[in-house]
Length: 144
Image 1 (cartoon, one colour):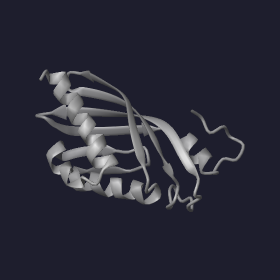
Image 2 (image 1 turned 180 degrees about the vertical axis):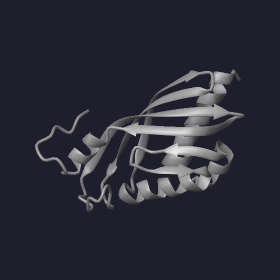
Image 3 (image 1 turned 30 degrees about the vertical axis):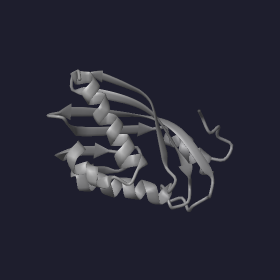
């Protein structure tokens, strides 16, 4: 398998096992021990345990969280993934009490990969759209 294909497979596993499924133990295999994580929900974390904490926080707010990977681009050790997040707002998020509303918003996650593991994760989601859908900004279009 070519290097770009292996890298794409690693990123698919990151989303599929860590975010979509219950495979948080896979963090130790997929992530470097000192991975730096910056999530679009305002979280910064270090290491596989930091990412596990972030995933649990996101799932507490959106228990039915779905991530649909729409595109992955690989350039040497850098990866960009276009993602759509969706779920139901059933737990506190950004200080907003649960609304029970469905939410769906786009985002991009940038990665650095070395030695077959993810060393950096930087997620940027359309949180303005997310907050609008939660009712924080009444009258503001929810975005696409």
